[in-house]
Image (cartoon, rainbow, N blue to C red; front, top):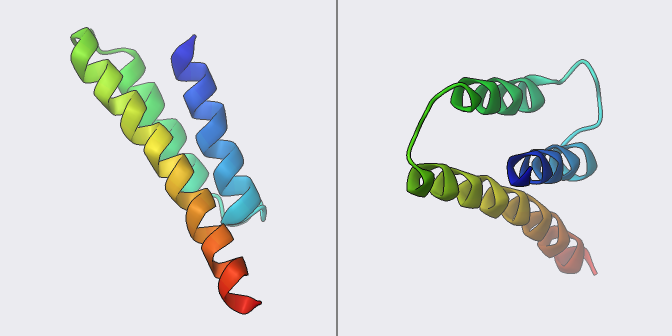
Length: 74
């Protein structure tokens, strides 16, 4: 269940801060592909936890960079 939350958080950050244009779906496609690829693997819990933390960190990075750019404009 946690992976679904992280997946949604990452997709939401991309839609909100990178692009919402359906023709530019390379980020969303890559993320979907990676989550599906790793969903079928029987990796140990530490590896899964690290990958989910990395995805969550990327979502935070995307949002933070966007907000930083907004602050620099003012």
